Length: 292
Image (cartoon, rainbow, N blue to C red; front, top):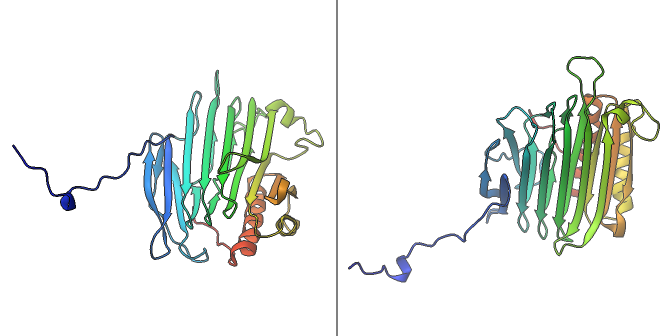
């Protein structure tokens, strides 16, 4: 019979962790002030790279690139991501490149991301655009739960593309972005639904002559929402090939930026300029472009 080891020598086991998604990550601020990835789980098709610490970012901010080994989003895919940024941590999450949403014979693909950002934390969730191929059907949801002292910048964007050059379009796109308190109270909700045929009609007030679209959500309560709106509007003024604007979120929760663009270059430029101006206003440092 083997005696139990003394309590002082017993192994300390971490609390059980059941990842709620295809991809799950938790960022934590270390004693030195540097943010690190404490927990991660990635199932096919995701791959998580090691965090980087880049010049021009707020002190201790971790930048993490998400990768996919599948070659895009396919019919029937159900992809979900969960990102937790713990108290005082600073994290920037992006992708290695744009992601193709492939043509589909039937059904659709669904993608969702949940961001939980706790007290005093900064989270930037800025994936590259999704490329909608002809006959693709996609539903996306981004749900953000943030403490009132947290700052969140989150982006979602789409490019319309026909590789054969025959003028074919995607079938259907449904996009939903929800911002909530940690208690689950709704701060803002944006939802739109569009077919490829409608997008190609070039109807004023919908897509017009533009072929791509993007949104940028800013949750931040320390600065007046009007200041954030004006900062974003000024940043967009110098960008060619876009039609964009910014408005305040209800209850002074932050700001919302929406833009249409002629092509992928102008879309990326507009989103980057808006993000860079807001980063400078909120953190005192303008970001450098990430190498991809």
